[in-house]
Image (cartoon, rainbow, N blue to C red; front, top):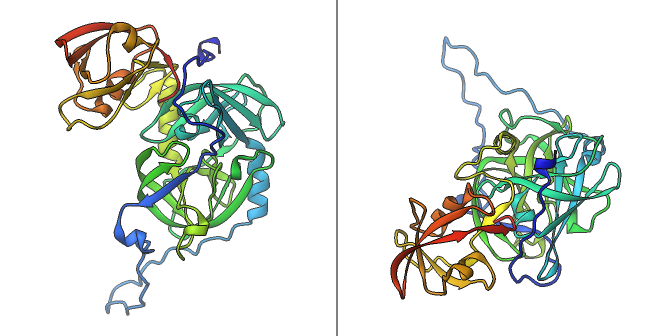
Length: 372
């Protein structure tokens, strides 16, 4: 267990005050934005002569929301994060996977955090958590708590979900802690593409293959559980359709990562083998702020080399363009993230730089940073 409990020691950007995590989702397709859910009204056409009757799906069984919520609550946690610069940060939810403290949550809940505090709903105890790994593109993270004998969630499967199937979303609504709040409704899309905006820092992220539920998911429920009538987790709550007060007549919606996709990330983290998308262990950082100002294919331009961080110590400055890390070409901000994703703090990398001093390569010793 000691290998999993390395401390997070880096800093975060300049978000001030307490920012409750709520991700506002904008549906990419015009049809979905206007309220169409990909369903067509059924018509009872007569069967062709001499053929068997059409096979119709079995009716969906009802849900008992109170029973399901009571069964799931003990296996949930409330999450609060903080940064060295701005103090209290995001608040969210998590799902207990193992009795010894593995917790599944959304990546954006812990993104940029210097410390993560988790309060278990089942026993009321607070724990200092360590981020074991994450996939920022899938918006999934795995935490580790120094705990034992925690109530655990029943993990189901998202493979057999059906449109209009009733589900329940439950989590730390409002980020205020205490007893998780539950809302329920039918599944209205099984493969939704959205652009999520994190209201804590206004960062945007495209998410695909999301489950959409007609329920008023709110701030703080990110990382919470989407569950079926049997109280089995079928998704990880990731986003809401926006502020209900400004919904302009559209019904509220919540979005969740299918549990099968989330558990594939968990298994990769447990394997201890990083990939281009799955980061494992403490995050390694250059200590630079980089924009998307350059055309794709030309590198990643440094806006700020943070004082005292590795890039600044190695001589990088604003305006320099990072073109490679070791033997890997850097063509964009995203490719730079990928190149660093498998690295660890204290690794030395050879950074190719184009700037005022020409084209050259410099060694940089990476330091620990917050989850990207």
